[in-house]
Length: 212
Image (cartoon, rainbow, N blue to C red; front, side, top):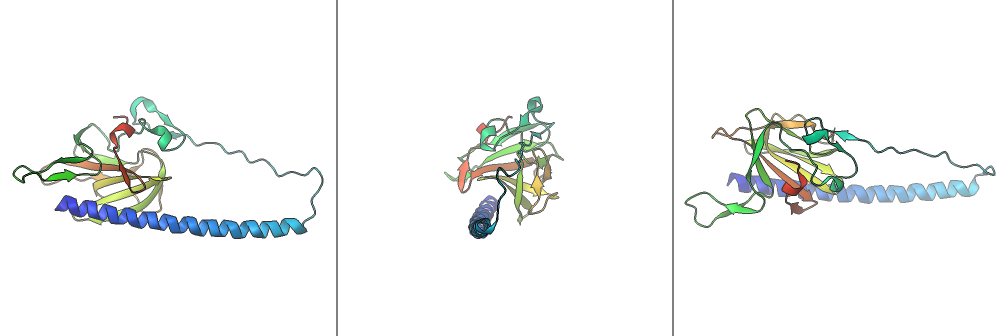
């Protein structure tokens, strides 16, 4: 039941985030159209000097470095271009204890299968959740006893669940390796992070994206 509630909360928040992004893009497009029209009107009335040209703007791609990732990799380019190179979303030693896709449920519950929507990583007590790539924190939500954080990387979203002592707020810019929160330890003593990757609504298997 707790997992179902968590998944439902994540789905609601992602729906909200996608709708908010859609509205923001529409507003930005409308503003750009208005600005372009205004510039066009000014250009038609402005006298230009022969041979005059606008100064060139140099755009330098930012390098993202995560000192705790394997091989001290430098991550450049887009989120998609770094598939297979993203660092672990949990600090310290960890192992995958829950795979992507429907999994066998609790013993004695028949054929009930649980879909985690991502993978579950078990770490050491005191482990922290960290951003796997630069992005913007779009959601910080408490669901039951724990919380989850969503970070947007262009059209991709990463979701970090079963958190406590959140270190970020909605709207924060984060870099690769930045700490988002502490990973909660449950009543059984397990410190587990549920990690998801989405292409908007589509759930992706995180395993091929991570350099574990």
